[in-house]
Image (cartoon, rainbow, N blue to C red; front, side):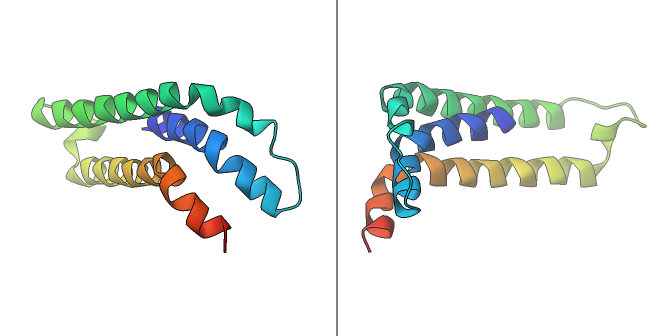
Length: 106
């Protein structure tokens, strides 16, 4: 989960980072160096989120020991909810080139 969000954040840096810094009166030229690596960040984010969803599904399908943390339905529900929250945050970061120009142009 964390890896997917981190990769999506890396993807966000190349496009939205300079806009945010420029709106704050700072130079975002250093962050624009991430632009050539954006496709790698996108693939990493999608791949890591896919892996996290598969691991959660596999964990729910596997039998747990009675005292293990995965045996608790509340714990499984929290993990599933955090994974979906991570996926939504990643989607917002990854789609930033589509919506950022409307937000930052006024």
